[in-house]
Image (cartoon, one colour):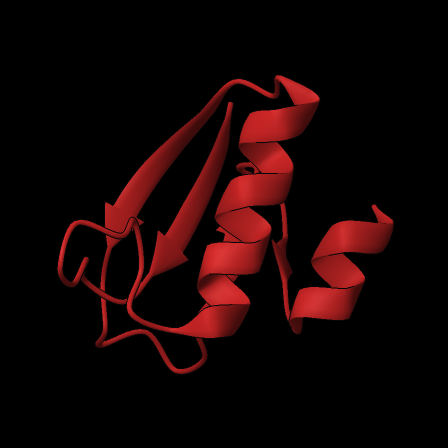
Length: 64
């Protein structure tokens, strides 16, 4: 299962960063099963992990 790491939510939005919100919305609209974790201590967020590799930046996440 994919895991999306992003900044904490803000004012009801899933992410307080526009790039993280873009990835979150894309994954939801595509119907992908994923876990959303708020972890601002990651070296670079948003990021995804599938157990084998981490994908950064946002454009790379959307292309996969």
